[in-house]
Length: 248
Image (cartoon, rainbow, N blue to C red; front, side):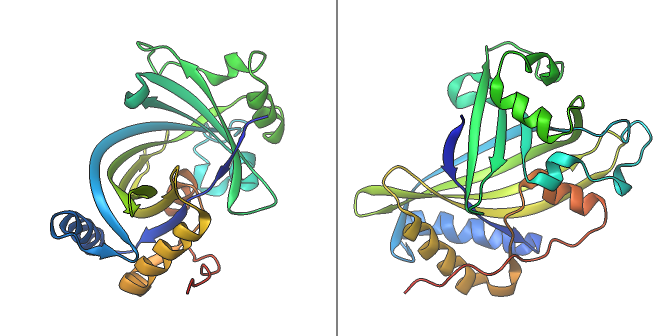
């Protein structure tokens, strides 16, 4: 069974100007030692990643019917993606499954050795080798996986500390997407994730800080990036989930 993973707080950033403002604010907080709520920013990292996301579309993509079709993995809130992991010098096929708690998911990785061509990997060939992928196939109606969207994610990542403990990771992302039928869109996103010394309460406090600071420019949405991208490609608005609880 895959590992149980706590999900991030995810916010769509409505305007590019606000995306730049958030990056400038947190970057300045490092040099000026400005507090981000009860936390201080000590480290910053920039990186670029590419992802391939899969669903079971039963010919819909070949019929150029993406705008009218919603795949079963998207409906279930599950996912299967392939990406490079430079920090581990490998590639990984990652599967994720929803749980009864919307803030928690199951997640597991299948590792590929360095040198693999991620654009030639067919995940269907791994079904009999890796049981988490079998669950994905079952959720998809036992149909073959097909690439539905490709994302390029430019991330500026900040590590937040309280005292000497690394509590949180805040990522400010610029996400570009392209479908197999040539549709392209982009959006910006803020993510807040608990790290080794952090707790769920830390995540909620940081979320409340950014919500108070940027207000209506942030849309709280648990949707994964690839589903947000598909919504935008269909011309759909990213709607807010119920707002997170405020922490005293």
